[in-house]
Image (spheres, rainbow, N blue to C red):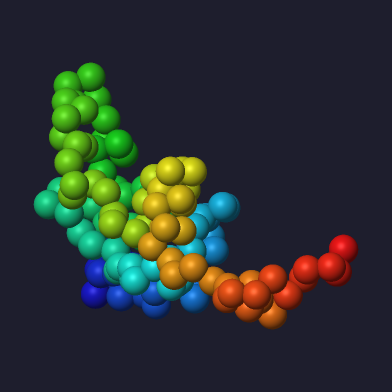
Amino acid sequence: MDQKKKRLHKDNLGIDETLPHQMNAPSFKETGMRLQEPFVNSHGVVIGDSFYASADSPLENWTEDTDPEIMSGDEWVHPTNDIGWNTTENKELLESLKKPQAYPFMHPTIDASKGQD
């Protein structure tokens, strides 16, 4: 089995629906979204494995003649293991997908803290 396939068959990089190897990565837990496995795009580059370098990548083989457009499009973006999820806007999007959590010991209609302060 070649190196690329070995990396694709590794255990899921996520732990408890998070990406702990990325600083400030959001949690997908309770959002309904599931972490997806890495994939190989049409250029033979593994996307979503968090290793960020591939011998087949145009970035690793860049010349004056390389057209930057070669690295545009959805085949270069992983749906769940992408640095874009670390932005404030996308973290807020994930938070909006979670069901609201009640605070412990809160009553839905009575202010239990009345007169306690």
